[in-house]
Image (tube, rainbow, N blue to C red; front, side, top):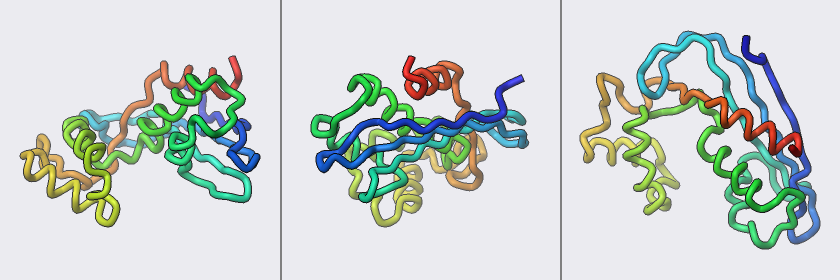
Amino acid sequence: MKEESWEKTILLGNDTEKNDIFITANIKLRNKNRLTWRLEPISEFLTLSVVGEIKTVCAGQINNTILENIDNFKFYLPQEKVLDLLEIWEEYHLNDMQAGTMRQQFALKPFQRKYPENFKNDWYGTCCKYLKRMGLYEDRGYKFGSLWLVKPLPESIIREIKIIFNGN
C-alpha cells in the first residue's frame, strides 16, 4: 500500500534582501480512473505539488525566480540539491494535470524553451498551433488538452524529494 499523503515545508534560504524562502512539497495518493500521458489506464497514482514563498515578496510558483537568482540567494542546501529540486518541480509539479501525451509534450518542450515569449499570452492556442504543424495535435485519438492526463511519479523522484526535504 502506498503512503496516502506526505507534506513538508523547508526553509530553503534567503533572498538578497534577507527574506526567508520557504518551499512546501505535497505528495498525495489518488484513487481515480484516469489515463496516463502514455494513454494507458491508471486507477491509483501519486501526485506532487510544490509551492514556494519568499516572505513579504511573492508566493506560489517561484521556481523561475529561484533559478534566475541561483548565484545571488543564500541557500541552506548545497546548490546541487537546489537545482535537483527545481528540476523535479519543473518536471513533476501537478503531474496529474498534463494537457499532452508523452509524444506531444516531448515535441513541445524544445519549442517552448527556444521561444518562451510565444507562450505568454495564449499557452494553449500556441501549443495547439505548433502541434498541428508537427502533425501531433491528435496522438492515437487523443486531442491535446481534451483531458488531464497523469504523468506517473517515479519512486526515485519521491525518494529524492524526501531526501531534499528531510535533509538526508
